[in-house]
Image 1 (spheres, rainbow, N blue to C red):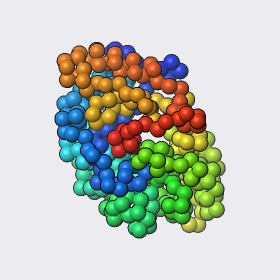
Image 2: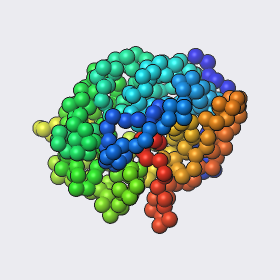
Image 3: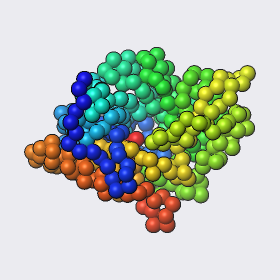
Image 4: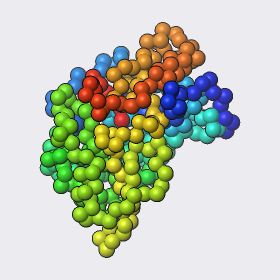
Length: 344
C-alpha cells in the first residue's frame, strides 16, 4: 500500500495529535448498566438523526486518509446492534493510513451476541476487542446491568478469544459498595484465561445526580484490595497514550503471571497524552469524553460540504480541545450526554 498525502492533522494547542478515532454506531444498548443509563432506559435517537453507513464511512475515510487517523474503535451504545457492523468494518479495513497501512480496528462491546458474530468480525478486520464485565457473580452482574445476561457475556468473550481477537481486554467499572468484592475474582479469572483486565474508576457519565465523588472507589482502593491476594509491581512498559496505568502480576501456584491496569480518569487523569477523537452516532465530533461542546459534521455533510470542508471543521474543533476535563475543579460540569450516547 502507498501512504496517503494528508490534508492536515488533528492537533491541538498543547501539541497533542489525535490518531485514535472512536466511532459510535448507535446509542442503543441491550443492557441498562446503572453507571451508564437510567433503569427505564433512554429515548433512542430517531433513525433520521443517526448517520447512515455511507455517511459513517465517508467521515471515517476523511479521518484516515486526510487527517492522520491510524486506529478506529467501533463503540455504541452496543455496536453489535448495528446490523451492518461487519460491512462497515471491512470497508474501513480497506482504507489506507498515512503510514501506508490498513488502520487497526477494534470494538468495545458488552459481549452479548458476540458468540454468533466474532468469527465474521475477525474476518472483516477486527483484531482486538474490549468487553465489559463488571462481575462474575450472576446476581451482582444482573443488578449492575439490570439484565440477567452474565452467561451470554462470557460466551461472547470466549468466542472473541477463539476468533483470534488479541489481546482480549476486559473492562470492569469498579464501584464502592456494589462490586468491590468482585475485584480479586475478576483478576484471577483474567489471569487464568490470558485476558487483560482494566479496572475503570466510576465516572460521571451516567444518569443525572447518580455520581458522587465521595463514594468513588479510587485507583488506590483498587490496588489495595488486589494487593491482598496478588504480588503487584509497576510495569516498566511505556504507557504512551494508553488510558490505563499498568502493574505486573507475579505468577503464583494459583495463577500465571500477567498484568492489570487501572483507568483512573478521576484521580489520575491521562489528559496530557490523550490521542483520541470521537464521532457520535448522530455525526458530532467530540474531542473529549467529558466535553460540553461538540462540532456538527452531520449538517454540513448532508448539505453538500466537500471532504476538505468537513476536514477543516474537524481540525478546527480539535484545535480548541481543552487541556483536560477539569473534573477536579469546583465548577466542573459533566456532559449532558450519557455514556451510551457518547461512545467509549
